[in-house]
Image (tube, rainbow, N blue to C red):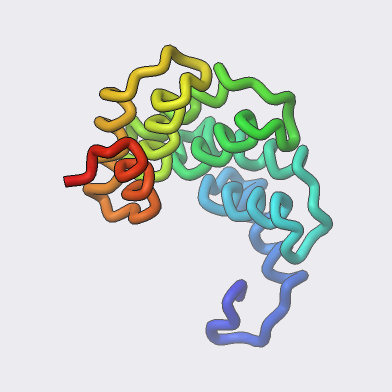
Length: 148
């Protein structure tokens, strides 16, 4: 219903259904409901609610939910900024093979965010992310002069 497949566009109904599934513990619905609150799409923007839903998803092992928790911690959106906690969640997501988590973990290592700066380790994570097709990481590799 969120993309009008088989029904009329009904933003309110889509959010209601997401919320129902999220409350039932569906981690992908929790992620998407968090994204709605984060962006203000179909609901009032509320970073604290977004963070709460991302955390619910992340706690169930959803690697995309973990990425969003780390993103919130790194920016201080909906929660106090904490680069060490952000690093923890970046790592959780990356260890599951999430290309966004791998890129973010590379950024932590590159810039020393919540961890000791280590360009070689940053490159390791950037390359893992690039191997999965995340194109935006290629610019990071080029900036470090490591692109073949």
